[in-house]
Image 1 (tube, rainbow, N blue to C red):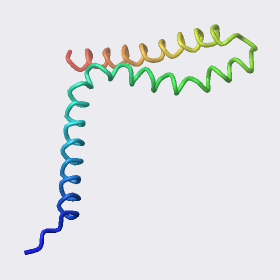
Image 2: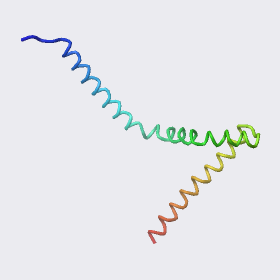
Image 3: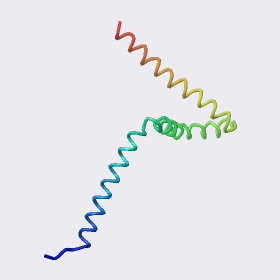
Image 4: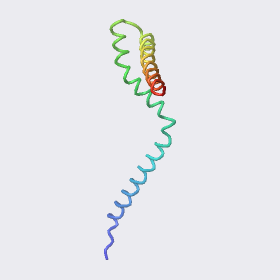
Length: 94
């Protein structure tokens, strides 16, 4: 019986990769409670960046002032959506 060391090395590496990926996914899911707000904030900042640049170019405002304006508008839109959803929920109950 011939034992091929290269074959078993590749098998062991593949098993090790699968175990490490599964462990990483498990840890990521457990830690998602902590990093999810940062991920959401990062996605929102990526979405409003073009709007800030557009406002800066059209009105010649500073980045700080255009960011404050866009932040207030986006916050009002998000809070308005939450309020409407909450009011629809209350109306469904009663």
